[in-house]
Length: 112
Length: 113
Image (cartoon, rainbow over the protein chains, first blue to last red):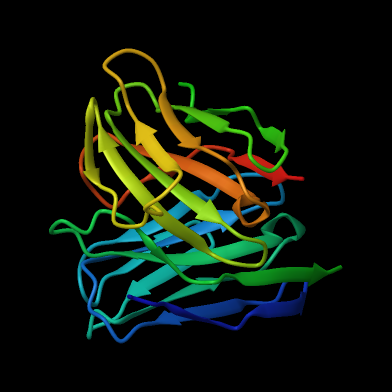
């Protein structure tokens, strides 16, 4: 089946630092998405990317859809304590494959 | 604007019992997706339904699991004769169209004793 390789698995950073995480696959996808999940809750959609090469921002978050359509990255600038959580990349093929394929997540831990 | 609602939030069952998980999509959404999440893992797609129809069940185990989305009322994920390996968080998502932007509910945490 399709798999997404997400890295790093966890990040321990200081408040105010920038964060970068990425997701790669051997398969081509039509849409890349980034979600954040906090303990005991469901994933919350942060950014959706629809075109190869697209760069999209949402506040301090910036994400890009790779040119090859096989990868994506998420950057968080000037991290703050409420950024703590698990960040998941997800990808969508469409064309009859309706489920999202998820990465295993990046645990972001911020030390004050 | 209420988001996706799931209940119960926590469910405890003994081996061999049935589990029924309910999902009410966001207002205006007629597309529902069910996912399962094991500890320290990403979500795994199970099934996609539109009103009264199962469209894609490629991720659904062949036995004991079933899903429905009736004309009236919430979508139901049913697990019969539960086993310990069914313990997981089950998430429902909805979308207004058949598309990638899926909005998730808070999940149901199933524990099988």
